[in-house]
Amino acid sequence: MPSIEHLKQWMHEHRKAVREDFFAFLRFKSISADPAFSKDLERCAEWLKNYLERHTKMVVELVPTEGAPLVYAEEMSAGKDAPTVLIYGHYDVQPVDPLELWDSDPFEPEERDGHIYARGAQDDKGQIFYAMIAMRAMRELGIGLSVNVKFCIEGEEESSSRGLSKSLPKLMKKLASDFLLVIDFGLFDKNTPAITLGARGIAAFAVILRGSKSDLHSGMHGGLAYNPNRALVEVLAQVWDANGRIQIEGFYEDIEKVDEKAFAFGYEEEAYCREFGVGRIGGERGKTMKERNGFCPTFEINGMSGGYTGRGFKTVIPALSLAKISCRLVPNQDPKKIGKALEKFFHERVAQGIVVEIKQLGGEKAFRSRPDSLLGKAVAEACREVCGKACKNIVSGGSIPIIAEMIEALGVEVIGMGYGLATDAIHAPNERFDFQRFEKGFLTVARALEMV
Ligand SMILES: [Zn+2]
Image (cartoon, rainbow, N blue to C red):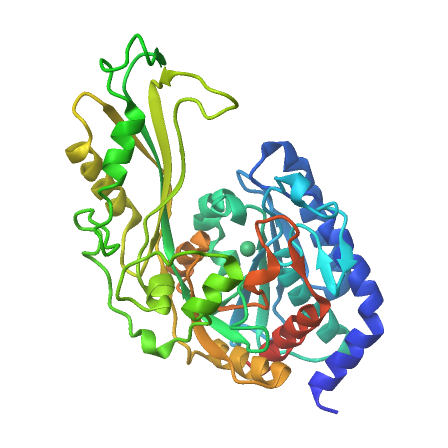
């Protein structure tokens, strides 16, 4: 019997227990953005350590960081001449608000219409858990591996990987490997698997404009004091030209031209607009959907505030105005340089007398990898075997900031995989995943590791 059949049989026999264990994992309120949950993160990491020790016989360690602990595990029986695959995932999750929009408790997994609803069901508890189960099944089935396998499961991916990033220089030896398999990505479409060969980088900012010492009465001071909200929108309105081209000087300067023909993209404009209720396409005119999402940088105003937006009415000229801004970056753009360019843009254009402060809140470069690496070929082949369909090469429009740092520090070749779909509502109410995809993910990881 081919090994995929053994694996399917194993899952068939263990389905109930795997599901129960998965639900136990989902119950931890491992929200990394809020310090109130730091104990939950620790308990979740402890649970993972025990699970891996008990079921995979890997050597497991909780590595303390400045933030949440890192779950590290290794199975080095292939020997020091064999290649090593480092599997990356995360056990932390996004906050759950607005809670009232959830149809069931985000931390009490519930099965409805063939889906498992819970925060983290897909991102990334579901995805990293099927990889753990793959290691478990292979050990129990006695499937020997010709690669060494390491796990790096962090607890702060959703809040910029602070702990892992700080600890990286000390962990070089522990995490040393030839390949990095990031299991936090998605399918091409419902029936078509994909490997992710790159993601955009990110640069995030808070822009604060100050006009006066305190809020002022808009009658007593109206016509006298310049409104910082006005100053803010005046500058922001100049960011794009009529074609959606970003006007910040030097913004496009360093971009490395990538041949986007080698990559597939899942959406047609019309279908995309229909599915997400989007009334108008953003980005730069003249570019394809694929280029706009994966190969062009963006500038987004994520939020704005200043003055009064509560119930009723308050006639005020606010003392300050705030915008949160993030740019998605493409290969070779430097987040720090983008920050400097943004600062210059504001200082040159803001109404005189308004004080500008720009804080850089985070930044990470984009990454790209080859499709024809040993691991890339193995994952693609495993996907084809499991899904019965050839794998597409894609890039992610999103960012996993720590990956670029790990590539640089460890000199690894990276491949992203996953069974996520855009409809899984990750980071949103009613996040979901399903067991069909969970099992496909399980089979894919096991077969890919066997084939490397
Ligand atoms: Zn994730």
